[in-house]
Picture 1 (cartoon, rainbow, N blue to C red):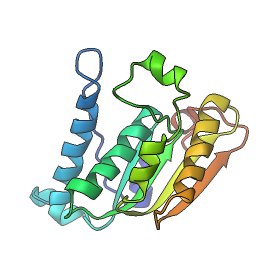
Picture 2 (cartoon, helix red, strand yellow):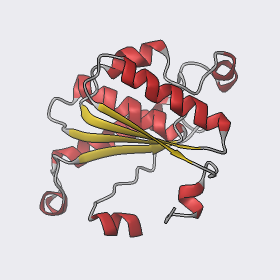
Picture 3 (spheres, rainbow, N blue to C red):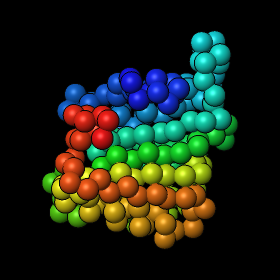
Length: 177
């Protein structure tokens, strides 16, 4: 809340449906619905207080995968959605059709070949990938994903921030970090 106030940003936090009560894809659909709502400016309060031309999509951990796939979906289905940037904090990418054990077996955690192909169509101009230096399990997939984003045909700018000496959840426990 303090960061949003300082940045003069309006933040929409999506309460997406979780497994096992719902199928894995429900979270992705909920994120897409929230983005469509925010970009539509249908709500008069949003129309007055928000700038739909400066949308950022963010996600932490597996939420980074949800954010990434929501941006990719906007490239296909959201011709009226203008996304300024994508913020991936300790992203962990996976294939929703695979159970968690299969994701681990296939080396999940970074952008797969099919996901990289979709990156070329991202409708945003820039992406920031933040990884904690102390947490190799999330640092390496984040680094590999940023490298793969740079290596595809996408014209956007990718910045990677490595938070030296920090653990995975530093932004939750030390927001001023």
